[in-house]
Length: 233
Ligand code: FPP
Image 1 (cartoon, rainbow, N blue to C red):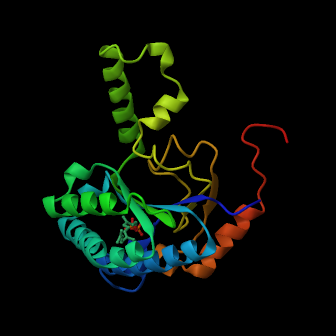
Image 2: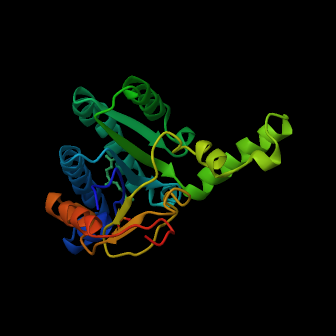
Image 3: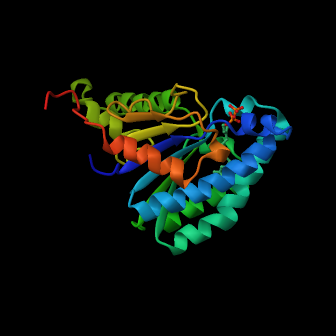
């Protein structure tokens, strides 16, 4: 099978990576940010079109303050510095999730980057930040209900396309492949609607140890699969 167009990644295992080395969990996140940069470079060079990274779930806010603060500073640094490199190379960057929960400077930065890169087409990085798929579906349903209330839409006009087009992912194709690191085999509220026909690749490798070679393995595994989309061929 051909290369996946869109790969979703659940970057898991930063904390365990650090604990195994007697380091604070935050050290795992810092190393994880390095992995992310390498993997994006590789994916772009390989010819993949979209990568969505699950960087912070809507449940992650309840982690200890020190850990949340470290993650916020990593996002801040990434959006301020590393993203410029991507922009120079024609990469579109967008964000999904509850943006309003972040500090004002981060919200401003996200809006600015999204606006500045919206016409770029070489590669698309989607960062899921304070993201939860159920929340995204709920918001889409509320928007549709409002349109029905206003008479702009009849209830029987609500079809799958309408739901897809009201999600925060309306501007990207459904993921072909979802990778989760660290040995956990669950979805944890990531892209629930969009992954209906995705292939899954679970690896025991912890995210900070994930690299180009491991990514290549996931792609090779995907290429061997035969997707039928519910059909028989
Ligand atoms: C899951 O590992 C990882 C996260 C909650 C954070 C992911 C963040 C990064 C990779 C940092 C950089 C991101 C950007 C966008 C610059 P975990 O902490 O749940 O690990 P554990 O399951 O071993 O405890």
